[in-house]
Amino acid sequence: MKSNMRLPENEVSVKAPWGNIAGLTWGSPSNPPVLLCHGKLDASSGFRPLVSLLPECFYYVAIDLPGNGRSDHFPRGVRYTVIDFVPTILKVVEHFKWDNFIYIGHSLGVPIGKFFNIAYPDYITRMVEIDPVPAHHTWPTTRQGIQDWFHDYYGFYDEKKYRKFNSGPETAPKYTREKAQQLMMETRGLTKEASNNVLERVLMPAGDSLYRFTYDQRMKEVTVLPFSGELLGKIYTTTTTPTFCVVAQGMIDVGCYIEVPFVMDEKAWPNGNYSYKIVDGGHDVHINNPGCMADDISKFILAEFKSKL
Image 1: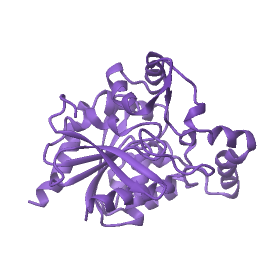
Image 2: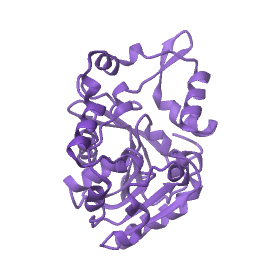
Image 3: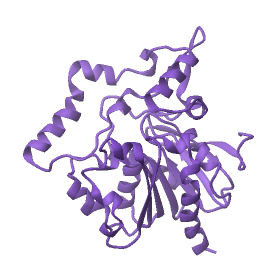
């Protein structure tokens, strides 16, 4: 439990056929549930800064995706794909016996939620998307495009690459905690305070005061589906689920959303249930500066809560 949180923080453990799904909860389970799902090479604790600014009238559950944080990895030998993470959400929903819930995803957590919502409609009542870059990775829907997609992702089965991606955490490099933190700050652009929230769940002791990251190596190249921007638009914009998207200016600046103009075009969503906000910052702005989005997210999810009063 963290003293700097207004809500009590507790560990949660959910059993799945492949192992344990770990996570954190904040608040009372008698309140309406909000499920939070992080991106690749991250952990549930990365949501702590944001949750600390959100309304206290919800029950927040943030999970460590398989291969991340303190959750077990998927069985060795196969790739990780966006679709393979969808049953993780289902297992959490079944564990808590939720009839419905609000979903907040960041990065890779966004397409996982989107495809869960397609596969299991009517569970998610509102969706918050925080810089959903992986949801909008595009490929030309052509014969050549599919060929390129296959070799880019499924070169995984090359013998050398296969060994690398299927080696366990016991073979990962060792670092001092200070070096591990420096690497995280440099690669993700996190502040020291923000990196502390993530590091607590992604390091394991390796002896001699050294640590290893617990990440599954396969998380570095999670397979997305070979859809063009036009096709993604046809799939995503027809949702009946009210959706609020937070887009990081830093990712706009490097061209991440050029192929998917519907992300910043509310009129492209025929059901009139989509809104977005652009915020200053990089991909992990929700950890570095949650205050730039907390009020907007609070207003959006409270609209659902008030409808149930």
